[in-house]
Image (cartoon, rainbow, N blue to C red; front, side, top):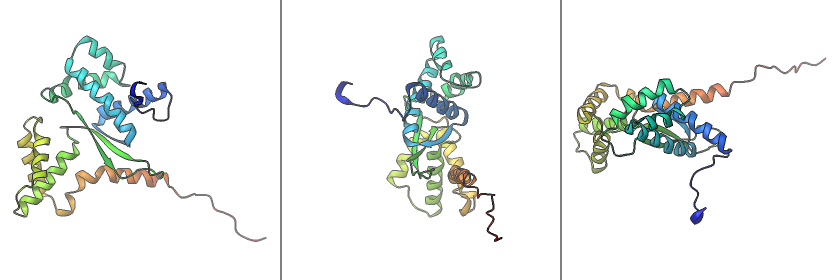
Amino acid sequence: MAGGRLQYRHLGRSSAHRQALLRNLVTSLFTHESISTTYPKAKEAQRLAEKLITLGKKNTEASRNSALKVFYTPHELLPKLFGELRERYANRPGGYTRVLRMEPMKEDQAPSAILELVDGPKDMRFAMTARTVARLEEEGKELNEMTQRNVEKVTQFRQDGEEKLKSMVERMKNLQVGDRTEPIKKKWEIQEMEKLKKKKPSTHLLDLGGA
């Protein structure tokens, strides 16, 4: 390999199994707009997802045929890719997806992450930015430089981005303080519940009685 650089992660699988895994991940991503997986898988699935959205923006017969070969549920997702998502990202030059690191989900402590479509209903950075703005406004403080940059990032290419952010900020203000983290923590809570289900106690009782 030229330069000795790794072009992609093998993910411990053969080429066919790796491709099947990535197809499954991007199918779930485009269905739910947000998925949780290991960090290496998220980064590889991100590459494929970005290519699919680029195909959607081209909106040609050739691009449709290419996307058809990737999705496991093409009849459900092709209309979304070449309709809703193509319109959502029409003015965005790139960066259609985002990978957010999170606490390890499994006992082996493998690096975990959330892979999401940006500017959608489950955009976590958008919700986190709205929560921060709401808190600063209630405290009567100015937006710091980092928050201002985040506001610009989450509204720049979102249709009616500034108005939608203001609406989300007002919603955050109307929530009880303890409820403001719910939209953000919900995914982690679901993951914790899944962990607990996997750790069900054994129902088999040992016979410790003597003769």
